[in-house]
Image (cartoon, rainbow, N blue to C red; front, side, top):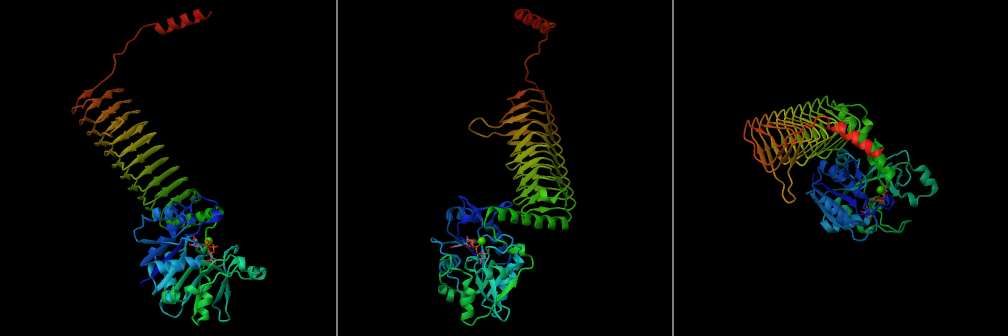
Length: 464
Ligand code: UD1
Ligand code: CA
């Protein structure tokens, strides 16, 4: 079914009190507008048109990551009806099912959007509106039913009499499906004679009925799907609903959580069976976590790939790959394409950047490993650092298999330490180390018997 989705995202969102357009506010890890384009995409929309206006540059720049999205600019914001008119004129869409979604409607499910498009695709209805009965209907357009039980018109909160506001509890969720040809033919008939002086898209229902076309409503059983985010409190409430929905799904799929209220997982993350997510864990972006892992507490992973049997405690990972049986933390920071191979250990207060940590290798304490290729079975002593930056260039450190690097070693890159070599503690490695060699760079130790005691005596005498 060639359905077009139009996402209305040009409004300022005054009630957000923000420098940023409303649709750029994040729900979990992604802006509101992307939840809506995602729903449209997964529902099978052939074209996704986003109407931008307020903060258009910011919205466009963000949507540049979504290659299938076309933007149309509504330079003057004269209301949702006007936004749709601009979208139709800008894209030439004039046939087929057209689904219109408010840009602040993040929890709508793809299946709902799809069912919706189908409700007009058979030609029986000219328009269909998604409705819900939220606990607090204030602010929503209210559905006035006709004698035959279908929607007669939608009355905005600000245009309701107090009786209508009190008695009409069925609300417009801000998701519509139209027969594209009828929509294009009649969109110009929307007026702005109302409390806000705006062109209201919901008026299309009454207009189409006036032309003798059938309209219908689809009631959404779970009102949460239809909630809009108009202010920060609603955004926080929606965030909690999204969190609940995702965590319930993960638990259904075999993931454990000590306390699901303190685990936040983005919509595109996957987590394997028997993995445990501990409190204050955030999994964002395209992260995937394998089976039988323990993640957290206090762990944030963005765009990470984690294999099975991995334990990450108090770890921050950004764009890294972690193979099976790895342990990290507490307090590890991995970033920039780090690749930790099977069975390796990255310990406490350790930072790894753009490096390969070899199979079974250990970087247990207080180290920085950057731009390094490390072999298998390596041990890096506490406090050791790859000096990868000379002020201009990033340079590589290469460490062979089974190398033992003593504590507090500076490896001044570019430098290579051969297989099986031994580096004495506190060395500054500025020359390549051959395989199986010892490298030691250390001033000779001196011992002066009784010196400390004599010095103390002298200091006390001087003071008296
Ligand atoms: C709208 C509906 C209301 C419904 C509610 C559901 C209208 C007139 N009212 O009210 O019936 O119950 O959504 O959440 O449609 N926008 C534009 N251009 C404009 C104006 C708005 O693109 O000129 C966009 C906004 O960015 C937003 C969406 O349209 O994403 C809805 O606008 P908003 O101001 O949030 O409408 P509501 O007052 O919530
Ligand atoms: Ca809204």
